[in-house]
Length: 68
Image (cartoon, rainbow, N blue to C red):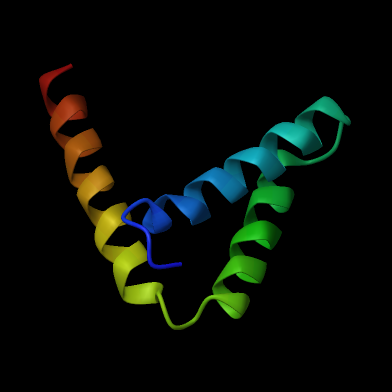
């Protein structure tokens, strides 16, 4: 995953897992957690890029929450 969009992969994968589990009347939380663990196990080398992207997104959401 050398793309600049590669750090979005864990967010997209867990979102798809959550949505699919919800549609199938399962536990979205458990599905997203399991998908995240699976992705983390498979893609250990790119963890630094993903962490940076997730921290940036979290900082932005914190700022939005502060103003709301």
